[in-house]
Amino acid sequence: MRNALLALLVLLVSLAPAPVEAAEVCDEQGVCIDGANWRSGEQLDDKARAKERKKNAKRKDAALTVELRSGRGSVFIDGVWIGQVPVSFIPIKPGKHDLEVRDGETLLARGIVEIPKNAGEVKITIGDE
Image 1 (cartoon, rainbow, N blue to C red):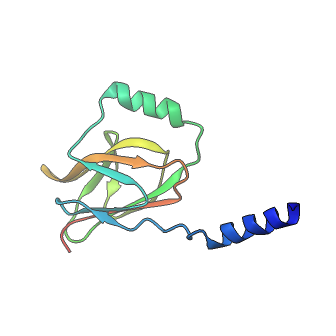
Image 2 (image 1 turned 180 degrees about the vertical axis):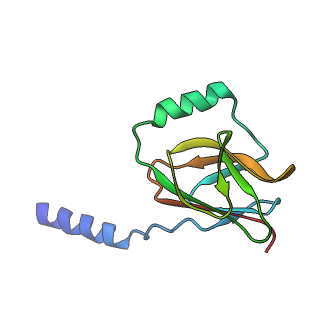
Image 3 (image 1 turned 90 degrees about the horizontal axis):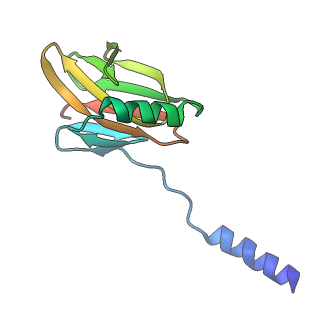
């Protein structure tokens, strides 16, 4: 009986669908994200940023890459200038973060990126294809 249950369990596990990789998702502003969630146009207040920072301080970093399909821009995360695009493999803690990409005074993208706890790499691409 025990062997039969074990065999049934092995069979059920082998028939379970394989996990599907999350595909790149794009919004109507041309922001495409792979490996995280994106809420376009939203921002965190200082209290929410502090709460996220405290909650995720001990978690393993993910690697963030931000690219533009054309043009130039600067990347800001949680109000801090990170660099000129493209930026690659920037360490970022899981949780919610403000992300802004600007070309001078022109806002190219603004929103909240939510990095999952187990994220390895997160890629954000901005601009029309």
